[in-house]
Amino acid sequence: MDGNLLNSAKAVLQPYYGCDADFANALMEFKDALKLSHNIKTRSLWNLVGRQLDKPLEVVISLEKNELVKKLLLGFKLSTIGHTKPRYRFNIKQSAARDFSQGSPTITADLVDTKIKAKVLSVDTDTHTILKNMELWYQNVRFAIRSAKCANTLETTLVIIDTLKKFVPTREMHKNYESLQSYVKIKGNASKYCKFCWRLSLCATDYLEARETDTKHDFRLNDQYCNYHNPSDSTSKYKTDLPYLKIFQHELIARNPLRLKSSNFAFQFELDDFSKGYEMDTRKAVYDLVHTKLRLTRGKENPPISLPEQVYLLFVREKLSFDEIKDKLEKRMYSIKRAWGKLESLRNTHQREKNVCVSTGEVIDMLPDEALLIKTVNSLLLKNLSPVKIALKIGLFVHTVHAIKIRIENIEQSILKIDELKKEFKPKPNFEIIISKLDEIIDQLQQYKHTAMNIKLISQIKRVFKEKKTLPESFISKFIQPLN
Image (cartoon, rainbow, N blue to C red; front, side, top):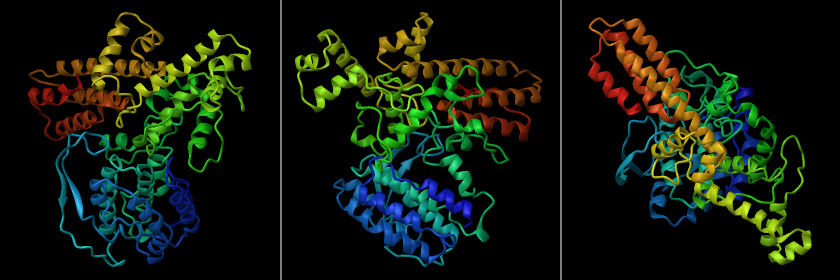
């Protein structure tokens, strides 16, 4: 590999929050030991992986009690993932989405015994087979994560596998393999997400896979952000949240297990055990905390501690009563209880929003499904209620309501474009106009992640148009209907 590839690899290889300490330290040592000569066809790379990472990972997996997880991870060693296959695999019926992270697959059987013998292939195995085996283990780990107590450590192993898959020998580099430098921009641990929040950035994998284009996607600066914070959109929250960017990035580093920086907040939103290994959930908690206005975070390096946090420290950590806190802070009891009530309200709101949709980055808890949440907010907007009042009424953060409002506007614009498209189906339709309108719809749908599946369907319609120059209206209706 070249120097840029090596530097990019070291930038990507970071332990997730809550990762096992021994495994995190081993990863740091492994990262430092990487050399330019390493690739997935060299024994030296796999020997290094085994020497540094296998033992601490084996200890973590041995503590796992869940039988399902134990079967999925049977024989799982990072040093042999390219040369062995998993014994057990999930048999799933895939949904319309392309990838497990984008859809909601229906599991038709718990596990399928592949009856594969524990045979380690030669290091001389062809590159395609090595990558295929690594992908099989990658999927097994992904299925195991939600049921495993060691989810945070397994999340880190996914980053390692994804990074190792990029160490393809230069002479065998396929035209479709991106350099790891592009990978850092598109799928990196941090740049996969918007710089301002927890939502997936415009260059995240789901977006790129949904764009069925023949040419390679060029990385743009705006792709570092989500649609909610897109600087090219004058209606986005880019300027509003820009003053919070520095403190947001600081708090993210503070939540990292390496603790390279200390948090500026005494009060923290706690994550459930199953969420501690998920970068999206961690970023959501940090974003909510920074925007609580518990501290004067705008442009201040060390913002002064607020009254609610003072009360929190004295009540929770020093175990003082409200009367003792009142005397110590020389404040009225009303102010003390009001400060504590604010913290309780913030904690309850965050708890209500704890369930984040992987494909959209939005909150889907509190109501049965995401569509009902959008419908509820829309009905309140039609009553001319402000986002602040809606947030208070249904118990969400104001920024959550703002994001839902933007998505509602996008949905309405898409439906209008679809209605215009349907009018073009005449006895003698103008195919150039129809294709142009399809492009407009695709561009509109790419503005929000909710319809990644439908972008693919609309793209399929466009491709059939170009090939056959004809398409029954019933076929169009079949594909467009899910958008309404």
